[in-house]
Image 1 (cartoon, rainbow, N blue to C red):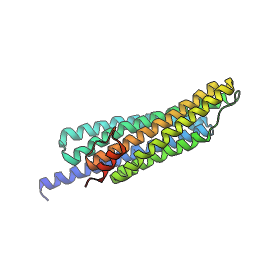
Image 2 (cartoon, helix red, strand yellow):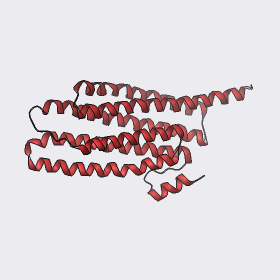
Image 3 (cartoon, rainbow, N blue to C red):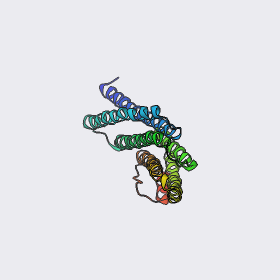
Image 4 (tube, helix red, strand yellow):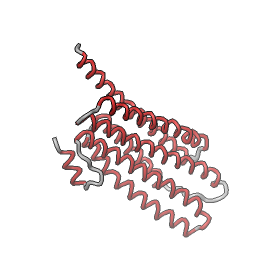
Length: 237
């Protein structure tokens, strides 16, 4: 094997390791999100504290992967598809860290809920549960699309975000009704709004990851694009 072939093989291995590491971080965040949702629905203070503690590990992964990305760009000076992959990974790292932050918000709300439910009637909405499941599915789908660099699957994830946004609006209307009917529910209802908004933001970040997948796979920047523009970008050979 020539020196050039050796360097090329080593470079390919580094790219695969980078993809593996971002997917590992994604798995960490996905687990954090699932635990956060469970801690809120029970509520479970111990589990909520574990979610909050786990956010430090996610933040450490963000810093480390940022370092790896910068180092790879400086050493390898990637072009074309390789550069898109590295940029896509860098953008996805940021989205995952922000999802971790939103999961932490949900866990903190779970702790507050545990304290408040002893003295006040706390609104419990099925829609929050279904919205959380939808956002979690979006995250899983976006990570799967990233693993396979599947632009069509990523486009489907982007389309799902409208449903999560609509669920948030429905939850907001219900919580406003709760607060109008019983002022004692104002404080816990505001906490529920915070949770619902965190879930809606998680859906947004999952959508952003899907957009980055299309950028890596097709070379098209579909941020702020219309559904028709996304469909055209995905259909490109």
